[in-house]
Image (cartoon, rainbow, N blue to C red; front, side, top):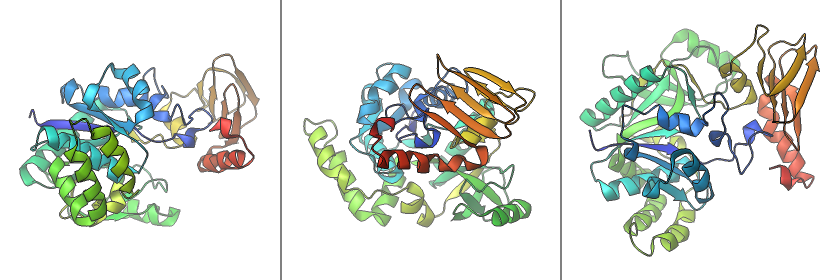
Length: 355
């Protein structure tokens, strides 16, 4: 078991939770639900399953300080990307580091920005995925058993019934419309795609080589320089040649013999203000508030006030209000996905300072 590792992907700009999330403080570095940042919570829920020194973080080079603020000095366990290239190159870079130090390394790929309520069940599920990946040599994904017909998540279509090992995966399904999501929930045999994978690190690199040869060539050049004085220069020279694509599109959709382990541990990707309202504590009227807020006859609202700011509202149903020192966001919860659109409009007007 000493060859087991976790790689927590902590890159990203955090614009879906603007104005709270910014380029210099994306959501994974913020204490959104309790006093811990999402990143710190992601690492701490691995306690008892993996040693601390076998937990790695991959993120932008400019995010090292924030990561080490949460964990202390990480050394080589912080794997720096010189630029964002989406999750396929990110995972490939991390796997190069792992294989360099341990050719037999098993790795759990985990996003940093998820919230999980039942951590013991999560650890049990991850243990199952490790065991299946170790014994079978397969890539294993952990999918979430759906609780409602969500249109905000991709889906995994299963190819059979779950047993003690898991279940074969038939296909990755794009985010569906409302009718299709309802049909899939009724039919059963589908999981939400949580972007969690367990496999041998070398298996993931082999799939990248088979499906993304140019990216594989760039990653091999970088991997060959690990531990040398030329590493930083080699990383900068070659990482930009990696195709900017997600691991789902670049690898998983056409990978050989992927299996799934269903997860039932209370999960959210905290991907919008609406989702954040579902995981924060709520009052008797369904309002999820943080900071100073005075609400009269408001229900099902999400209110976030920065220190020193007070939000007052009346007669609102299902609204988001986020107030920081330089911006205020107000919109219906059902329109949470339009936050990026609003920010883009502000940037076009020259408000680069609000990114």
